[in-house]
Image 1 (tube, rainbow, N blue to C red):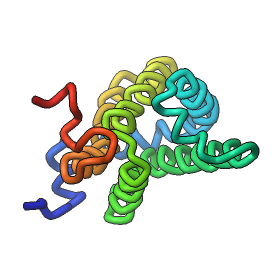
Image 2 (cartoon, rainbow, N blue to C red; image 1 turned 45 degrees about the horizontal axis):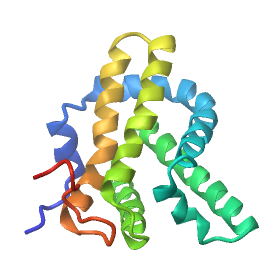
Image 3 (cartoon, one colour; image 1 turned 180 degrees about the vertical axis):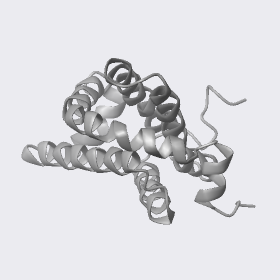
Length: 171
């Protein structure tokens, strides 16, 4: 049976309080300026994984470039919303829609959940260079918030490419 999705309950569980919101919003301008480079690096990283690049190959010629450009813009909006602290029902709906799109194309949850590790690694490094130490905790909490809808969706519906229970991680 599916649990009711209450963003405020999720935030309380993750101990995401007013202080974390304030730190997250202070991070936003630093992250926004670095986000295009992080996103470009992410898509360059994806290019080394044939398992993932096959999802882009369906769009021929200029279509592939347009698809990747669209995906980069979607990524930027996702992270910008995250760092504004927009963790309401609309945020959950957007995150769930992205997860469903990944399921629809047959992408295993391990790949789209794993993408957070790439982003968080770079965001932690940026945070360490530009913000006080307490910013790392808020960033970690934001990462958990961001992964939560996708993780719940991954558990609820198997994909054509490997099931919802993250094969190789959950026994």
